[in-house]
Length: 143
Image (spheres, rainbow, N blue to C red):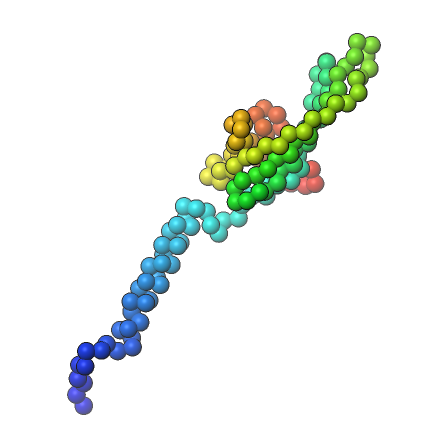
């Protein structure tokens, strides 16, 4: 039995270009994931963090609520309460302020940067601590 060439490759030969491009796209996707971090779980940064501070002239309490907005963008809600120490030794009534910050998290450095003023926000997730500059906040409700 003699095979004749009729100009059309067999089915296996027809599948080779499709397989080549499928593999090429797959490898390209894996290569890009290495740069963008896809498939890597983002750390659980969202939550409530609190700080209390005091001095000879005042007492203050801060609450920061970190909320994931989209991707690596976060919205931080800051609520501050403070009161002054009066001359007679008592305290003035509590005064309250609210702020909202927008921040972007960089997974390669582990640092979140507040957009408006450039504040650097770092996290120690094992200890449940968030730092904004020198001020440290403890996470409420577990680490």
